[in-house]
Structures are given as C-alpha cells and as structure tokens.
Length: 269
Image (cartoon, rainbow, N blue to C red; front, side, top):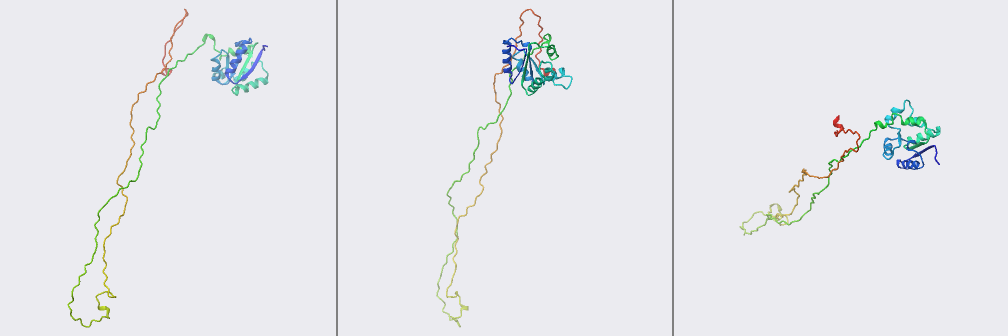
C-alpha cells in the first residue's frame, strides 16, 4: 500500500539506498525523496550511487545560506515537512547522532519544493562536474636491518714456561790443624768467659742458601679496539608507476570548448 508520507532512519548509506530502490519499485518518485545526514562524507557516499537530494547539517555553506537565526539547519528543514512536533524532535536527535533520515512526500507542499530551489541547489544550467586524474609517484623510505654482528669472546689458554734462576748456597769447610802446644797459664775450664766456643761446648754456624719460588702477576699485553664506521652506497631501484590520462573526443555536432590547462593549482598561486 502506497503512503503519502514515509519517514525512516538508517545506520548505513547502503541500507538507505536499497530502501529507495524498493520505494521506486512501489511507485514513489526519486524527486519526492529527501535524505538528511550530519556529515559531508556520508552525503558524498549517497550521491555517488544515486540522484537523491541530500541535505547536510554540518556543511558550512548550508548554515550560511539557510539559517538566519540560532535555528539549526536540520530544524529548519524538518519544520517544512508534514511531521508532528514529537517526530521532528526525534529525527533531529537521530541525525545529530549520525544516523541517516529518509523523508518521502508523494504530495510535497510548496515549502518542500523551496528547499530544492534554495541557493544550496545548483541549477542544471550551471551544473559542474569534476573528473579527477591520479598518478603514482615514488616515495623513498628506508629501514635499518641487522646484516651481521661481531662477537669477541675472551678465553684463557695455558702454556708451560721454563726459566733458569741463579740461586746462591753457602757451604762450610772445616779445617783442623795441630795446636802449637804452648802452655796457657791460668786457664780455667770452669770459667766460661774465656772460652772460644758456645756454652755447652758447641760452635753453631748457620748455612744459608737461596731457594726460588714462582709468583704469577697479571699484566696487560694487548688491547682490542673496535670502531664502527658507516659506509655510504647508492642503490638503484626501478619501479613501474601508473598515471591516469584522458582522451577527449567530440561526439555529434554540439558546440564544445576545450580549455587545456593541466598546470597544478599550487603553481597558479
């Protein structure tokens, strides 16, 4: 059954577009359909796949051309529709939250038609379409990777070393000679003070010799110095780049003026 007014909200542009296809199959006209969204990118997604009239609440020139008071654009638009106050407040909130509002009025009034005739709508006489051309350009990026490393391990080796050390040693030579047999007067064997040998009738003489022993001391015999140097080389990289170009050809006898000015806009400044 066909209704005069349909008002629905959607979360995704794809779902909304599918719904409009179903409505057209039911007999509704595309010029009777209005879509209200919050963001320009959402509107562009819908316009790329349909000819629906899309109104964007956050578009700067929309605010400048349609609002002369503190009233928000979405409130201004919805006030022209045949909706109850409760419905308008609900749909304002839905759009502000990022949802897509579809309004279909098979018997649209003059105020709804004025929306399409507003400065926001572009007439067919001044319709402008833009085709962008793209090309690929090389951008060089470098990353550092480890290609190797130097590992220095210190370990201990053992060797035997023989050295000759001169040492000195004392030894005693005892000589015995016959006495002169001269008489010593007043010699007292019990009086030790005149004796020439140690007490106890012993003569002790120490015999000294040198003995060698090993003392090991660590000394620095070598230093290892490692320095890192950076070598610079040039690598040649070949890549295939793609670029879009156009071929312009005229079909029919209509008057067409072609202005060929492919300079960058930055150069014009």
